[in-house]
Amino acid sequence: MHDATENDYFKYQSLFNALSDFPTHTLASPRNREVVNKIIESSSKGNFKNTFSETTRVYTENYHDAISSVWEDPAPGSDNYKHQAAFKHNAANVGAYKAHRISDELIKAESKEDRQKLVKRYNQYQAVEYNAMTARCRTARQMLGFEDTKDLYPNLEWIRSRSANPREAHLRLVGLVLPINHEFWQDNQPGNLYGCKCDWHQTDAAPAQRTPKSVPPSPGLDGNPLNTGKLITRKHSYFKKAVKKDVNHAIHDLPDDAKWLEFELQGKPVKAHMLHDSGELKKNMQITNDLVNSSNKIKSVELLPEVHKDDFDIKKSYYPKSFKFKDKNKNPDATITLTNNRKWVADFKEIGSHLGANLGVASKQADYAIIKLKKGYEPSDKMIKDNVTSKVKSGEIKGAIVFNDKSEVKYAHPAHIITTAK
Image 1 (tube, rainbow, N blue to C red):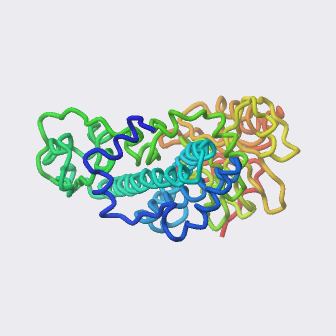
Image 2: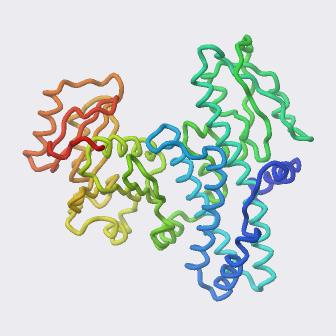
């Protein structure tokens, strides 16, 4: 493999610089030797399913270690918890796509020696990815802290890298001062190049009069992870060179404990499928938190995968048998299990206008609508009730819960679902 992303891993001795600072848990580490033997044995027999499953587990565990090393144990339901959940969800997808590629190559390899070389090469990639995720998690956490004290220190200053051989592109940014919310920081942060050890800090120094040219990020390290929820994006070659349908099918075939990520909100188990819409995960975690906080009748919540209409038989396997699909193209957001073991199939929406229209959209996807109103959108109690009851009476939906931007219940049908979840 010689694509731009992988060559970039090793430019400027970034691999060796990165490895000097962070612990790495790769397939070569002692705890994984037995796993490696299993992987090599199963791939030599042409067993793609087992090879993919084992490598997905190891890579995902490795990346989650990187995230936890920075985010530690945030309180369930907190903003930090939702950010960590988004990063872990992204990392699991990176692990699966990486596992799919190496599994394919291991199956095609002609000898045990070739397979061992493949594992060694991917270990090197994995070490760099681990360190890139650590750096980008650190950058995201710093950004959260900067926001808390921006009244005193409204600007950020780029600090020189600790690397012995820093890249000229980032050296040109040393000493740059710009406001915290300046658009330049959305595409330029410490950690957006593999092996980057640059840093930044808050300051009340005067900002620069001119904004420098952006530094092109390494493929897959684009965007501000705090905003995107992605430590490694779809621009990485693991995603760009993959056949999405093939990887998705392999993910659906994983054991449950590998394809579902487990979280906890208000003491209730919440699972997010690896193929749940990553762009909606943080929002849906917030709505789930509001939901379980408002009702002690919620037993658990599953955030469901997006499944293509051509794979309808796969899609059906994730839903209660009683659920009637109104449109095979649609993917409801969640299955909510109540304490009496009844299941609601629900669509989650965060909206800033047009409550009635959004309830109509939700009704085409699911039986229940869980709506969160954005700040500034304050329809009257009567308007909310009229819109919900109209949809219920017409048979379009079975029920709905509407929260305001402060996570307070504005209206619920059926009303008895809302309790004090303590």
